[in-house]
Image 1 (cartoon, rainbow, N blue to C red):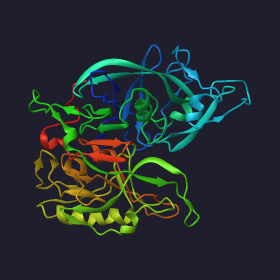
Image 2 (image 1 turned 90 degrees about the vertical axis):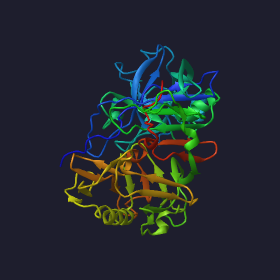
Image 3 (image 1 turned 45 degrees about the horizontal axis):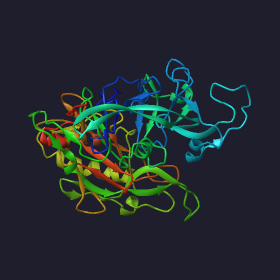
Image 4 (image 1 turned 180 degrees about the vertical axis):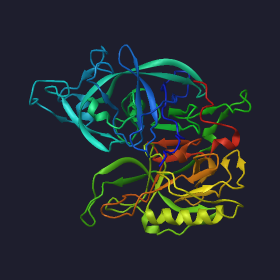
Length: 450
């Protein structure tokens, strides 16, 4: 089967940093990048980060679940101590080893290098696409970022020394896009990128991400508090602080799945929210509500992800959504079923469906959160994928049943549903804020001036 045309941006760009005259805000621009896609279901979101002394621009995958930024430090052509005068490995007993809770590696079994050095400390890092862990060495270096002025204009570049990262080798890069050297971790951990920037630059412990609706456009990521300023494409003399459009829901804590009844595993640093229902054209679909709850065994709830291309639903929820969506969409003349286009299974001929500012005019889907007045409205631009001029597919994936070997969460909100939407994660207050699609106001995630 043909692979779905890439509909999400595959890279983010230069990250911004604190300016004394700003409101303690950073920003990062997304830029298109042609990935090497090993898995047909994989589209990757990347960012360019300036690292080392002198600063060298390198490309990283963006991972909301990443606990620490990591990269290949042992391939000289990409990045290593030989290319940066401020790069150094953390020694056993040092502050970076302590804050990361890394274990001392002691003496290497063979001669030191390239991925083992005596008296250094190691911790596990995860490649989210390969879904594999590796023991990586803790290191520090300088990261250079661009500041913003009032969230609307570019400020000066600012260097942050002693930024903690993890070093691995090129094998850990498996299944990542061509040119990627590592991962920018954004999770709720002490050494994720937003946590370190909050400590080093006295920023608010929050960040916001806005993925563009077109692979040919840029997106933006802000570190720190609002304002988040965009300039509508139909009137570039006007500016909009879209932080006023944010609505909020609680971030939940979830735990690793356990097999013992009632036992609780280690805390997971991902971003979890609680959905209470899903609507299609304003009516709730049939869901076993216990699936949406957080259970002590680590099963249940909803996770937010930048490494899942599309929203993933537990099998029974997925089937219920498809049934309700199909009943509604088939009311439009000449709309009929079409062949599946992997990884999406439910596809349709467009028939007489009209277009709107928010995409194809298909039945509206909404995620309703635990505070029932808070819902995420998902319009055509985020709910369906136009795979050709005549055919579209429902942009949701069946994640399988929640069993001992199946899914651990009821839903994963994926990157496609986040396009054209500003999503804010507040590590301090434990909330997630989001706008509905900005396209209704002629605002795209690329309408910034950095």
